[in-house]
Each structure stands twice: as C-alpha cells, then as structure tokens.
Amino acid sequence: MKRIPLLAILISIILLGGCFVNSQDYDNETIEKAKEVAESYIKNNYQDIETVEFIGVEESPMGGMWVNGKVNGKAGFTIDMDEKVFKVMGAGLKEGFPELKEECKNGGCDY
Image (cartoon, rainbow, N blue to C red):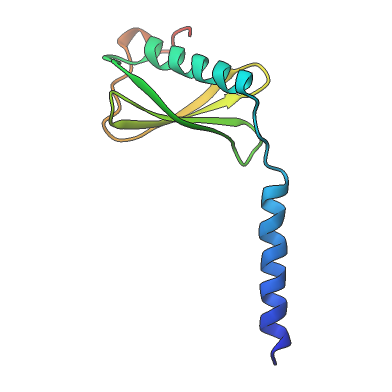
C-alpha cells in the first residue's frame, strides 16, 4: 500500500523536473535588446506612455521569449517575442493599459 503513494510522488517529481530541464537563461546582451524592442513597440503603438518598467525576461512554454513589465507605474504587460530576430509576436495587456494609437489600429505601427 505504501508503494503507490511513493511511486506517485516519485513520478510527479520526475515530470516536474523535466519542465525545468529545457529552461533557457538569456545573456545580458539578449535581455537588453529584448527590453529595447519591447519599449520601442509600446511607445510607438500605444497612447500616453510616460514610463516603461521591466520586471523580467523569460522563456515562454513554446520556446519564444516573454518580456514582462508595467507602464506608467501600474498597468502590466507581457510581450511575446521571437528571440532570434526580436520580432514582437503579440502582447498581453492588463486592465488599465493605455489605448492603441488610432494610426496603429489597422495593422500596427513600426517599432
């Protein structure tokens, strides 16, 4: 009877450990470039951006890069970026994030 719970715990540890084996640490140059691109994207596509604060850069589950932060000290964002060419693939914006600029609504603005 004790073998089943012990086996279940062991399998869980192995599976969770496998999630971290594929994690990737980015060098400082890559992180700085990602932040630069994310900030440019935000400032060129959204209204009333006063400040951009970065919280972290991490590998997304699908292998891309996520750049996390806040604008104007409160509204959070996650930018999904192709780490090889630093192209913004999408953005997750929290409640209160500034509106998209009118000229960027039909296809996005350059960044």
